[in-house]
Image (cartoon, rainbow, N blue to C red):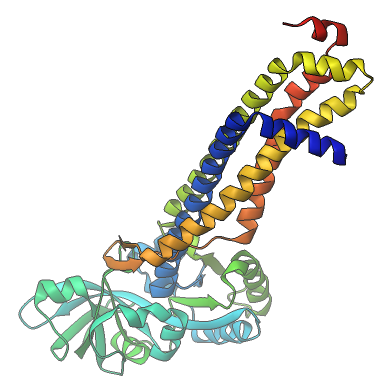
Length: 412
């Protein structure tokens, strides 16, 4: 086998120009795939992080039927106090749960005594909310980064439209589940930078203010948002929650809970899926580049070396060894292209990070791209290139191994 490798490398060196062109084409293909996967993966992860860590959380728990009516923010589909306590006890016992936040979500009217408009509100315990969605505090672009009873965070669009700033007094009017109307005065303590999609126009008040404003007989929850320690275990955690929550829930809500990941709750999941589909197509393009390049080189190599093949066959070289020789040539081309492409790709990604490329996502501006190369992606790309190199070499190598020595020696 050692001699076959030496002969294959010698033949590649002998046709230096063609070898360099083919290896360069494979290298360029590998570089483009690595850079695309690194950049698109970084954008995708940053987009998911902005959505989950700014408002949604990784997983949300609701009463059955709530998500299908979520646009109306129905108060009649809230979780009762007993159910909230049992769910909290179950979450406390799950090792992958880092934090969770109980929320009351409802619509109301916001008035600055001169104008009135509608607003979506989240009544939360601030400490738990900031642990569950840690980027929420970074969205506070004006005012103090804390929330006490009697205070409210308002969205940037509302603040600009109604000329409201931190320190101003406002009134929130809301309708409770029974249809009665109640109002409460708040001090605007912070302005939240906007996000695209659901949550971009949400305001925040203290949980106890929400209970008081809606005149609840007992504390309830529209949803419970959960943050995981390991986001990679999202689906495993979802399955575990579905199992444990139904098992631990008391009789009146057993089987009436819904557990949803951020993917179900955010329209941006479709963009993430599109990025994954694009990545698959880019890999298919790499496969096509390698396949066509190496097959073309090996077919030309067989055609130009017919008499040489005939000679080595005539002196007793077995067809299997001739087949191996040409396949090793293709293997060497693929291996060289994948290794060189991997090295250059990592260097390009490193250069991108040094350049600190910035982009905007929705209303968020100045986000810095942090591209990274996953070792598993490098390994997978290298394996794909090598396997395709072998497949591309198979047909020309098989043809060379089946040549009749006399016919090959007569070739001009």
